[in-house]
Image (cartoon, rainbow, N blue to C red; front, side, top):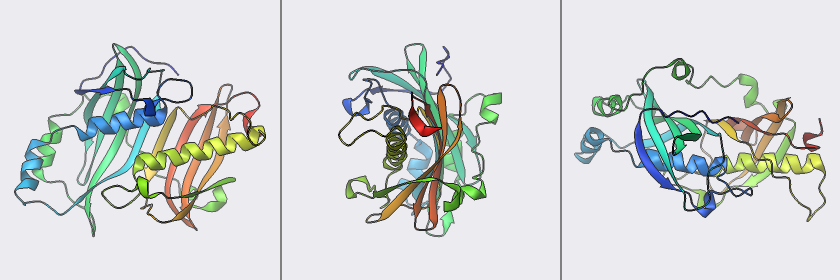
Length: 278
């Protein structure tokens, strides 16, 4: 993991590193960084759009995250450290828009990601109102080649089928994971992928019950949310190893309820000695 020494333009929000953000190595986990990105997005002000909604001229609607990417590029911590999250807008479409974000500690980039958002009602995605587009345009990031490549790729059809995967972890949704949209929060779903990778790694190494669990969580995720995960419910997280190289493992994962795929993720994490049985 390399951490380039540059800082993108965008609106800066300072976020404290919390104890719950730390992984077992004492620095912020990838999931912890995903929380910082969410925190910064929530704190953005969209004044024209907020006024439109406040006047009752748009709605009812839900704000839905349909995809996100998060990468842990370097250690950050301990608890109490303040990091700077820079947020801007990479793309605005007819019914969706994409934030680009970077996490800095001083002049060092330690993480980053993006998030694609839609506004929707019960009939599906809504066209973005002009007031929201104007707010988003004020946060536009400079166009770069990397930004042009940042649009999330389409999910390959084989990823939606159980036969594509070789390993399964059963999970039940928890009431504490349900958000204001009445479905399991996207951060909670990201922890499910972490859980599946940990279970797979444990089985690959063959650690005895009560033994030490290898600390090999992914350092990057690209996640697509395809359907609602609700409470109560019994689910399975599917996993297959797409490829291995000297120091890393590339995973393909999916969340299933029966034969229905509700989300997929690509993850990259450390390989570890003796792990993955390959």
